[in-house]
Image (tube, rainbow, N blue to C red):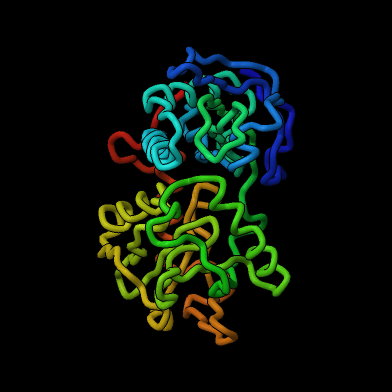
Length: 340
C-alpha cells in the first residue's frame, strides 16, 4: 500500500474525493448486494423523497492507523445500531447492521492509500448515509432508497491545539419532546444552520440548546453532546431528545473504568452551570472540544479551567480515549475493529 502524496500534517478538515465509495439500493422491498463504485456523483429524480421532504439520515466515524501499523475503526457496531434506529423513526428500511459494518470495512480497504499514517494528526473520516431516492410528490415515505458510504482524509479539527470555546444559550429550540432529536437525521442539522450562523455573527463558537418544553434545562449543542466535570464526577445530560453520542458513551466508560470517576447521567438545570469546574463538547470530529465560557442572556458563566487550554480532567479523558483509538492504550473488548 503506497500512501497518497499528501501533506498530512497540514491537512484541513474538509472533503477530498477518494477512489471508491460503497453503494446499495433498496427497491421492491429488498436491498441489493451492494458494490464499490468510482463515481462520486448521484443522479436522481427532481422529485426524489430526499429533495422534497428531507428523508435522509447519516452517521460519522473514523478509521485510524494505530501505533503498530494496523488500520482500525472505533466501535462501528454502535454506528450501525444508531443508523438502524434513525431509519425506523424516519420510516426508512433498516440497512442490516452486519452489512453496515462490512460496508465500512470494504470502503476503507478500497481507499487504504488515503488512510493517514500514524502520528500525522490526520485520520480517515467515514460518512455512511441513506436517502429516499424515488419520486414522491405526496407527503409520504419514499419506496426506494440508496445507502452510501464514502471516506475522506481529514486533519485535526483544531489547528494549533484545542482552545476552549465560548458558547451561548440558544434563542431557538433544537428538538421538541417526542420529536426527532434522538436520531441522526439531516433535518435536525438543517434547522440548526440559521442559529449557528447567527451565533457566529455574534462572536460565539456554538449554541447550547435548552429543553424546548420548559427552557430551564440544558440539552446539547447543534452538533455535539455536552459533558461537565464537578469534583471527581463526570456529568452528562439525560434526555429523550438528544443524540446518543458514541463518543460520549465511550467517555463515560473511560471516566469510570480507566480514571476512577463517578459518572452521572441526569437532567441539568441552567442554574447549575455556575457550579461546574470544566466543560466540553464531545463528538467524532474532535473527541472533546473544551468549553471555557457559556453566555446566558448576556451573563457570562466562566469555568475555572479557563480559556487557554483543556481542564486537567478533560485532558485526561481526551488522552485516554485517543490513546485507545490509536492503539497506545489497551481497549475494552469489542471497541476496536481491525480493517487490515
